[in-house]
Amino acid sequence: MAIANYDEKIPNNVDLGEDRRLKRALESWQPNFINWWKQMGPTLPTEDVYLRTAVNVGRDGWAQFGHVAMEEYRWGIFLAERDRDRKIAFGAHKGEEAWQQVPGEYRSDLQRLIVIQGDTEPASVEQQRNLGLTAPSLYDLRNLFQVNVEEGRHLWAMVYLLHAYFGREGREEADELLLRNSGSSDSPRILGAFNEETPDWLSFFMFTYFTDRDGKYQLGTLKESAFDPLSRTCEFMLKEESHHMFVGTTGIDRVVRRSCEVMAEHDTFDIAQYGAIPLAIIQKYLNFHYSVSLDLFGSEISTNAANYFTTGLKGRWAEEAQGDDHLLGSSVVEIEHLTEGGQITSREVSALTALNHTLRNEYIADCQNGVTRWNRVLEEFGVDFRLSLPATSFNRKVGIFSAIETTPNGQIISAEAFEAAKENYLPSDGDKAFVRSLMRPVYETGKIASWIAPPIKGINSQPFDYEYVHLA
Ligand code: BYC
Ligand code: FE
Ligand code: FE
Image 1: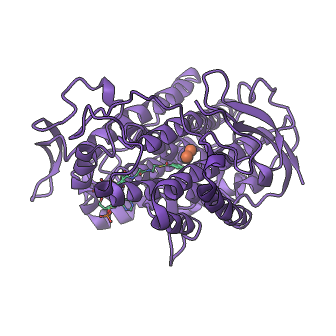
Image 2: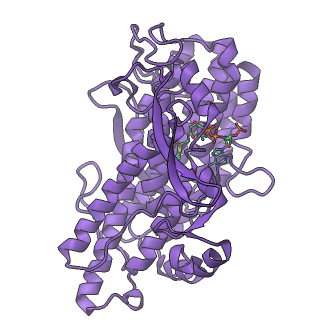
Image 3: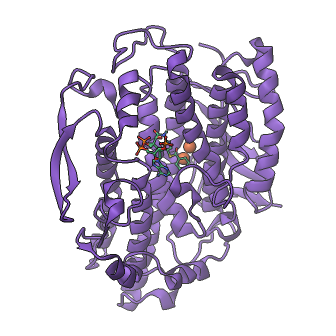
């Protein structure tokens, strides 16, 4: 295994020092990245932040913690260790050696997948850039910045692949990744959810729970890729992703807990007046973030997905654990179907074209775990309310359900009826303004905002009242 080289300008375990051209290309992209970070990254000025930095890929310790100035964060290029015997696990090339180079015939598809993945990473940093101004505690502020710097590192990971394997076109795409911007009207980010706003911390926790979790599943399928450098890159990124989802899971848990405490104290559901977030608003935020995240899986029936699989570019979740022939030549699955008469039924389709749908189902089951966990808090407090995932058909812009409107329960309604009832399903302007009104920064060590409970423990065995961030 290559030993992580930490003395170089760009920390890496890919022997960057051995490849002068590649190193120079990346070093000339680096100032553009720093420039982008300064323009589009976190707006709150800080002295330093207690951050985790990836330093190696081995089993015993891949990260170190310490206070660092964010612009000096060591964004590095780390790929999981190479398995020299790795064979392609699925598709037409099953059993062949994993590719160390890009086969010419798959070049444009692979490049496209890497660009889409790369585009989401800086997009999320842009979406979250103002949240530091209203953090509920220094602990939360630190977690926000941790997520931000690691999404920056994931951008580096994709840019490395583009520079190292896709020549001039790859370098051009790498430049474009810094030029598109979340929410921009003339050059938006590629996927829908990454052009939405993340204006408050409830949105941030929902985003890291639901949207980072799409990342988990997409990276999981790219980890299976026959193109070994992509596979190894995604494997390492997944290690960092688990903390992002932890921030979401525990963040929503703590919001729900605080709401329960205030409800118990005042014996009412009507807790907005006491500076806590009513459960109905939490449910509406959940409805929004879940439905836009479902859109990230693409169409239920997708020839793109079938081709990616057959050609070996993108596998299934836990491909090797799937107990079939890994070819899917004649398998079929049941998927939802919209009849001409406008009813939701089901039908059988080829498993190959339904891969987006199958992956989305794995994702949905995983999302349910968080809901179950949050509902345990409600149960613990004896509160007669349960959070739930809305129907797959609710509020969709991609796939078969984009043609219709349904209630969160999945009942089909007219576009007019949806418009009229929308405020009951999705955060209204009033709800958003209310949540925004609660967002006041709490920067004193050990203190926390009114609308959220403190965490059970701190980061890396530090206490909650640790000085996680020194403001400028
Ligand atoms: N918005 O066959 P279809 C993360 C396009 S998140 C806009 O239905 P396909 C992260 C599609 O590109 C993980 N356009 O879908 C999380 C295609 O366009 P072309 C990100 C969309 O191709 C938090 C057309 O519609 N990674 O890492 O099977 C923070 C028809 O496509 C959307 C990936 O997504 C949409 N929602 O699947 C930070 C992995 N959906 O080609 C980071 C790479 C579809 O006809 N991407 N379209 O012009 C892919 O695997 C696939 O491109 C998709 C779409 C799963 C996204
Ligand atoms: Fe990421
Ligand atoms: Fe993430």
